Image (cartoon, rainbow, N blue to C red):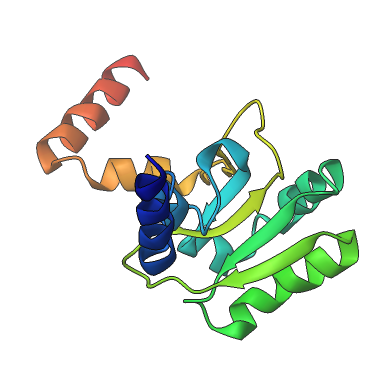
Length: 152
């Protein structure tokens, strides 16, 4: 029994021990999904459109830590670092390869949060309606025009 404990201790020392949810931690920049207050993809981080919403969440959770994916160049991360400094939240730049995760920013609590992984979303602009119309076939467009003429 004593030898088993010593063997396990040595094994953990050599291999680093078993990690709990390693894929989850890789995806969420080193934290567990249960601790994620919000997360952003690469495209969302680069647009800077979510800074006001993120600032509000950071103010609502002053003990939360901002995790930034180091796969992005520093100029892309700088506005978020400045935001963390402004709100007095801790931040870390975590090294991840671009193909390891689609998450490039995580605001993580120290403990589990009630609604894990709430992604910030913006309403799509109304241009999407026009794009849908451009995807219609020519026949569908003609039918729509003739219906409008009949009713109009």
